[in-house]
Amino acid sequence: MMKIANVLIVGSGIAALQLARTLKEDLNVMVLTKSTTTNGNSHMAQGGVAAALGVKDHPNLHYLDTLEAGRNHNDSEAVKELTEEAPDIIEELLEAGCSFDFNENGHLKLGMEGAHSEKRIVHSGGDATGKAIVEFLVSQLGSHITVQENVFVYELIVNVEGQCIGVKGKLRGGKTEYYYADHVVLATGGCGQLYHFTSNAETVTGDGLALAYLAGAELVDMEFIQFHPTLLYVDGHTKGLISEAVRGEGARLVTEEGTFIMEDVHPLKDLAPRHIVSQTIYEYLKLGKPIYLDISKVENFTERFPTVSAICRESGVELASDRLPVAPGSHFLMGGVKTDRLGRTNIAGLYAIGEVACTGVHGANRLASNSLLEGLVYGKRLGNWLNAQSELKVIANDNKAMPFEGPASLTPAQKENLSLPDKHILQQTMMDRTGIVRHNGGLTMQKNWLESYRVEDWVETSLDDYSTEEMNSVFMLITSWLITNAALVRTESRGGHYRADFPMEDHANWFKNQIVYKRKIKKDGLSEQIKTALTT
Image: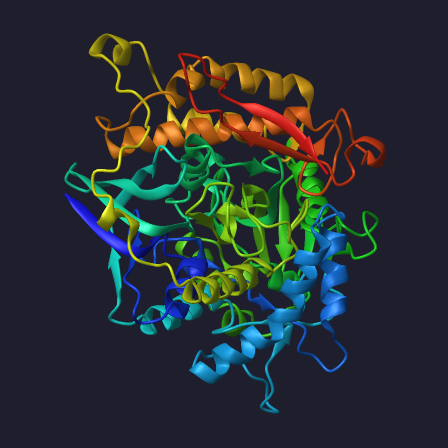
């Protein structure tokens, strides 16, 4: 079967919903999501939205904080635009009826988070900001927008002219559906589930990154993974995120003996940039020393952080102890599909917004609460641009049989020779070797282990006859390979990327340099699977 739309959005997080909400009513818009609309990182997000709304605050201060957190690897113009647009985005949502938290004086309640110089974090429902905004945006979707759940998109359809004209999706019963559109937008989120410890929803496995790479899109900064310092850690497993705002309200990281571990590490102490806090906790855990978040100084903790409190209760952690056991885990990908400031990729007709995209705003490490902001800003920006395009006419309607190049199908004998890693082993090895602290030996071991599963053959393989579980494993394998390769190439430490064998920033060789990956599509029997290039 085949379905047709003007704009096809893959994903259903804040970026996707903001885009859909912005698109005008005479457009046929279709949203595809691999699970349910609310089963994703956006809905789980406890942090708020960063915007310079305080009396003493200014977008330029927000801009400087973002550059500092990103270790100046950011695209400064993109950051400037993001921070300048932030206050209007909040005001627009307020006027449209989105609920945010106010103080006793009737003003927006502004919170503090790590690496911010001013209180500028807007929350809704305490620590349920993502849930509140997602549900508001869903309520705003018009009748011209169709949302189809439980569709696993496994291939971007690119025609012989190099234009993306649609996607292939596998439905829950195993049936394949073809979707064609003038414009295809990836809003699939990041790749947190590649790691054993993560704050991410179970659906976030790097699909959009692998899809884009397989289609020939450029990917950049894949080595820059942010590890959140404080995930609730019980019986060797992470149970959920403990928001940065908890430390913003006065919680401190302590050892079992009560020693404050961040005291002499950074001037901002417990509110230091995330990579510094994560690495400090990691070093203690490696020595077998548990670390706790002391919440004794946080007033009205249960009322202020109802989501965290619920996670603790569900995990058997007593809040009355005032100590929450924590560990760092994979949280956010700063890199992704390379786009311009509208979300356009190097492939005509293909766009990317939200965490799957790399716009340059986050640099080497994302500033807290800039992620929801990015989704809101770029969703609106791309929506306004698409609304202004006069040539929207559903390209596939005029070219239903338009040929396209796709991977070749395997013979049964070839298929038998390909295998996939166990998901849990992949997650554990990524955590151990391509995790918070990296070095040449571990990264080389991980690269060789991933390539033992013949990644390059999987890149050339049609997935038409595979199950969604197998497809998911293929995408996890490819995305892990890209991250590990990039981490091996960058011989310095910067932001979220920490190399024990290269512990310092290397401005001479790496300042503003990006590692770019682009698959060369197979032609004339020849194929170069992965092209590494450095750009400034």
